[in-house]
Every structure is written in C-alpha cells, then in structure tokens.
Length: 461
Image (cartoon, rainbow, N blue to C red):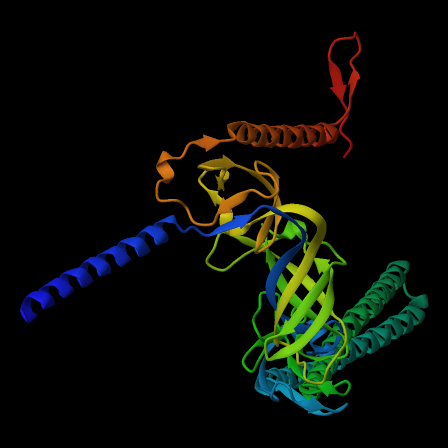
C-alpha cells in the first residue's frame, strides 16, 4: 500500500514539475524587452582619449653655433639628459651633446690651421726670394746701362759707325732694363696675391678652430628658465632622449612647459570630425585621478587627417584647452574627453539598441498589434539614443531584441528607403556640379580669333 502511494505521489510531482517548466518556458517565449518612442532632450557627445600638453612652453634647443655651415657639423647625438620631470632652475645643467664628434673635428681643424700657417710662411719666403732675385737682376741691368753710356761718351771721337754701334748697345741695355722693371712689377703683384690667398686660408682655418671651440663649450646644455623638464616629441610621436640625433631642422631637445595653461591633445575619427567645432564645451577627466572632473573647450582642429597605425581609417588632431589648473596635473597624463558636439530640445528619439540594419537600410521592430519590420530615417545620435526623422510615431513600442521569426515578418516603409536614396543622389549630383564649376573657373579665358573662327586661349604665366 505504501509503495502504491509512493508511486502515485511521484507521478503527481512529476506532472507538476513538467507543468511548471512548460509555464516558465511559455512566459520566457512571450516576454520581450521593449522601449517606447519618446521625445527627449538629446546631447550629441563624442568620446575621445588624449594626453595633456602645455599650451605654451619654452623650448631647450641645440646650440645656435650648430647653424654655422662652415663647421660642417650638421647633427649631433644626445649623450646625456637629466631625468624627465626634474624641476630645474635657470642655468642648471640639462644634458650634453656628443663632445667626441666635435673634438675630432677640432683636432683636424687645428692640424689644417698649422699646415696653412706653415704654407703661408713658406709663400712669404718664396715671394721674398723671387722678388729679391729680380731686384738683383735689375741692379745688374742698371749698371750695364751705365756702362754702355760711358762707352758711348768715350766714342765721340771714333768713326760714325763705332758711335752708332755704341748708341745701339745703350738702347738695347735700356730696353732690357725697362722690361725687367715691368716684369718685376707684375711679378710683385702675383706674389702679393699668392701670399694674400694663403693669408685668407690661414684666417679661414683660424676662424673654424675658434668656432669649433665655441661649439665645444656650448655642448653642455643649460636651462634658460626655471621649470619642469619634459622630453621633446617629434611630429611623428618619437620621444627625444639619450641617443637621439638633433640638428637645426629638428633642434628641440626638451621643453619647460607652462603648467598653468594645459591642453588635451586628442584625435577624432573621420566619422565624427564633422560634428566637432571650435568653441564646443568639453568634459575632461584625468585617468590618474578619476575623482577629478574638469571642463574645457575645443580650440583647434586639423584640416587634414592622418592614417591610424595598421588601419585604413583616418583621424584628425583636436586640441582642447583645459580650464583651471592643478599641481597634480602633469604633461603626458591621459585624459578622457567628452566633447558636447550639440544639444537639441524635445526631439523624437529611439534607443540605439532598437535600431537594426543590413547593407542598405536601417529598420526597427514595431509592436502594432502584430510585429512589423519598419524602415526608418534617423538623424543625429549619441551613444544611447538616435533622433528618428521618419518611420515611427511617439508612443509606439519597439523591440530591443530581434524576433526569432524575423524572416516571416514583412518589411514596411520602402518609400522611406527610396526617399533616402533619392536624397543621396541629389547630394552626390550637387557635389559633382560644384566640383565642375570649380574646374571650369580654373580654366583660362578665351578670346575670338581673327576672322571669327575659334578662340585664342590666353594663359598667364
């Protein structure tokens, strides 16, 4: 009897459990997460991360002596640099450039100067010797002329032919003397020019030695004013540090930022950049201090995008001025920025989770007694809601999860899709017309050719 009761009770319990599971399953199937189409105020927000920089800073650059082209030293390595974040006073040691490279050039320059100086002395001695020999020759020729004049004077009682011969000898000696004097003047100018060139070479080598000594003395870099030292960054993001090369085209070694005026440098993707305008308000969070909330505003945005690493997408640089200051804030700290790109009142909105899409259109699932797949046209949106322009009405109920029988639900609102496509075509046509007008405006104006046939195109160069 007890066994029979046990079997009956077990059967009843099993039926109850099966019925409970069936009821729960039925309720789960019939339960669907929904949301209403409502009017609300909508803020268009763009979220970005960035890092702090000083809006203004004093640059610590390589010595101005490196700009001297005659030194033939175009770049130098940084061999020493104090730790980033160190507070320095005016005149404090910051770092050093490669002394060995300059010392090697200085050694060569001194050797060249010595050789040039010896060459200059040799040139002076050679010139003096050459000119002295010519002067001796002139003296000899002068004496020869005098001798010929004496012979002529003594021959006045001789025959006419003897006298004529003496006169010819005298004239010949004079011509030779005059030629030698003229040759001496020319040779003197040549020798003076040669010595002058050697002197200029000596001065040039001496100046190079002096300039290299000045550069060598300037290789220890000093702080121009008090402040916190921050390593410089190149435009492509590399940090200047020990081992980096500096030159007159990339001369910044470090910076002393003005910490009272900070900016957050960030990058916005090409999809959102059209929403960003100068002057927009920004909520700035500091990742290192989550409790610290600050405000700011957009001050600049780049006109030209740059590619993201390992991606085809492009981003645009945006700078945000941070309002206020704090001793806790340091350059290079990471910021979380919320740019308020717009604020609209009483807009008809739907949750972003209610929007579904395929390759060509966007739609929602509307509960109108039966579930309908409704094509919609949306406008601006933020991370939670989107403004709906067409397709649904205020108060209608939307599904947030795609129904299991999606393929059986018919599509409504094809005319909305056609309208959207038509607007796209009109915008495309308008852009093409504007582009054609710009091209036509760049073409040179024409003028009629003589005879009335064709035009002569005048091109201004």
